Image (cartoon, rainbow, N blue to C red; front, side):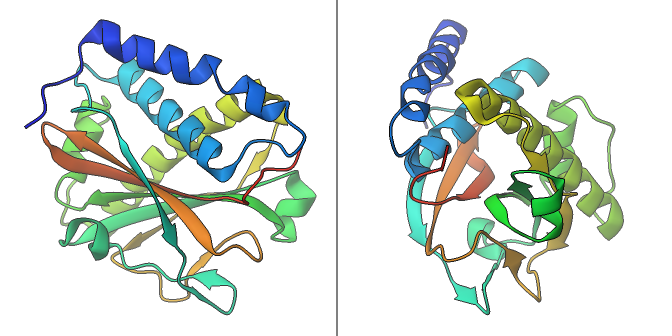
Length: 215
């Protein structure tokens, strides 16, 4: 089992990642999907650090995976993340409200948690207890988390010069989304980031983003 990150090392990682990302926004092509994944990882760590006294165990793991797409939507099986009943929530980002209504998405963000672990995760984030047997409470609780993460991510992107992107309302599911999830058109890959808590995978965050994010 990896030892928890020391507070000073944790702060340095967040500072280093945040300070090193501006240069990508100033390149001709804009930041790569990998860089956007690093921004997201940094946003999650910052949020977790601000909200809890618990630290992630070691550095998050980010991998690139192929999308499974049917009729333009991403197929999702949440139980592939934890091999147990899983709750997940999604938000999309668009340039503005009009683009959001037209489903002209720039980014799609999904978070996954073990259904049974979700109440404990919310407690760590200083939120009220929820009943993991109540489907609606579980989905609303996961939606609260994706809103927190997406809001922090949006602020990070604004710091890179991407202004006030518009976020969709969250949608939550248990195990699978029958109709699939909306994603930016034409994409084939995603970045999956796993965060360990007390030595075990506790949170998975996915980002579907273009190879280079337009300025």
